[in-house]
Image 1 (cartoon, rainbow, N blue to C red):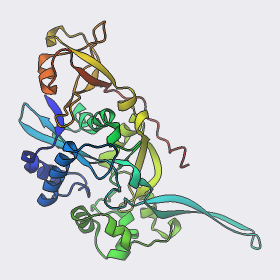
Image 2 (cartoon, rainbow, N blue to C red; image 1 turned 45 degrees about the vertical axis):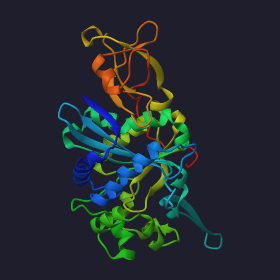
Image 3 (tube, rainbow, N blue to C red; image 1 turned 90 degrees about the vertical axis):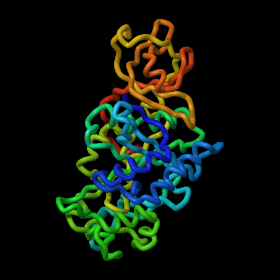
Length: 354
């Protein structure tokens, strides 16, 4: 029995373990006790606050295996990526250099500092116990956040974004960082990664060059890493593309990892979600049906799990008493359901940025 719920203070040791085991280490999930305590407190405040529009709220969720009594995953939402500090990325652009006298015309790829992503809602800080990777638990943890967003759209931006960890070499170093950032900080990737997690990435943007970076001046390894995800996150990126996110021209200023963006109301977990009253039935009499994400409609008591999408002839969602108890709903109460399966992946760029 796996369920996603908001984080609680008692989950701190589990967050420390998940932060320490994340592959690669995540800047937005530092293995730092004080920062993780702040994360829990911030999420609790956000859920207790009346919100009419997105601001500096941050919501953290955990995936709990109730049979083991363990928290085995965590994931977060930043309501507005740049509410506290501007959220910087590099935007891929093309400059044209031409001379009629020399009969020369060259298109040169560049990277320019941008804070356009600051206004988006950011899905971030996901870490899952290795025992559950490759299972439906991974999709549940990743997409339960979208089931939450679908219910409270006023709390979030109309555009969502996900920044994926970038490519690292066999030594755990970032070719992109070594070709760009290291020249201005004289520190290795892992050291600066830890520092950025404890503080903020904004200090990186303050020191990085403000002028466009010409890609031909970077090393071949750095150029190859731009927009390339870490191998351990290939499946996650594929699922988000299936969800309806598209690649943007933005990449992380730190490791060059890809940033995908999607219109909130066009994402599958939002557009295909529907409300159904609950009808309780024993598990042995439920008809065969495809699995679905099922969420209750409680803000602070949010719960999301995977169950069969079995509907009665009158449109009621048939749940076992066990699943209903986990969701905290009684017969007749409405729950939100969205298919677990996603359409085929369309790996394409945002039309507005091509």
